[in-house]
Length: 431
Image 1: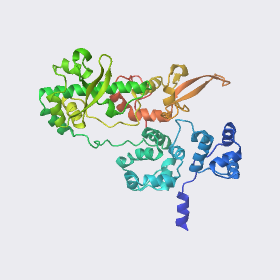
Image 2 (image 1 turned 135 degrees about the vertical axis):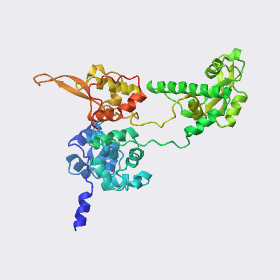
Image 3 (image 1 turned 90 degrees about the horizontal axis):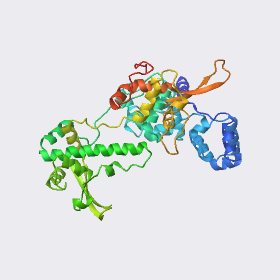
Image 4 (image 1 turned 60 degrees about the vertical axis):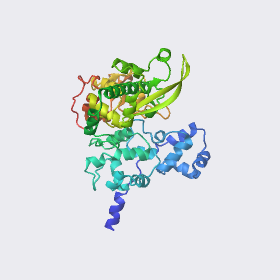
């Protein structure tokens, strides 16, 4: 009997309910009767009545069905604002019970290494200590957010932020950087570079610079909300047009090569030698030129080996996998602006544009867009006598303070142009 009592005491209880009256209001706004809502969900009218009266708590699947039937988000039913999600909210939004989530996580290597179970996942969501094999190993636990993100179908950074809200007494897990599959060790890349002749080195150097330029252009397109082609497409750089240069001019890459002393069309023996060694790949297509009409075009792309050799030869740092929790340079600049303002924060009018949709609690970006990080909150400012609200100010949320404290050094390395010298709070904030 003692074992049974212990077992049931460890079993997780429901953690998210529908606020009283919220379901009935959303049903009225959708123009549905209880019978119509019940039919859409496939449950009885009596069950809908119990949900609205708070007599029964919907399971994650039922909550998901309710949201779909009412054409709203799960957070509209639970009252959890965007940017305030905890780990349990991500699971409920995915419509999964603890057992269902664990079943999927146990198919991953990290789920097996952590011996995940429903009680353990429940304790993780509640912010309680989790014990067991490998739970004290930061390298293993650091892989769990990515597994959760895949199961819940959300970005890794969203899981990381939810982790920090759920487990306020510990820093968010950080994945251990490993050399990505298919990358080239630095020693091998340097050896490859040393075996190239002067002309081949010029090609690789200019190819790397042109690729970096193209990458910056793609970043600018993302910032402006424009479509961005797949990396395999924009990395294939225009090398030469198969037509007289007097008629079609030179490509941007040819102009780079010419400034470095290479004046051939750019498709001769040097390119062939680099391709034989697996450092570049070439392709051909047809484009429409305003002066001569359709014309053949040769494109060239660095392979992983070629890019690694070019980086080794030019002193560029080796490629690193993206670090998901970090903001873009634009959003980090916005957040740093609020940090510099100190505890009082910024007047609401000082933060304009679309930044609140990515950083503000309660904000919702366009349909299908990235969810808010919940790093800024609009805090009301009361009159001295407390009789009315005189305005609103943007202030950092607790998870934002912890995020900045944990990743400040990484931000300074990645975005040195963003001013962090006069932050309005100590650089070393307990995490």
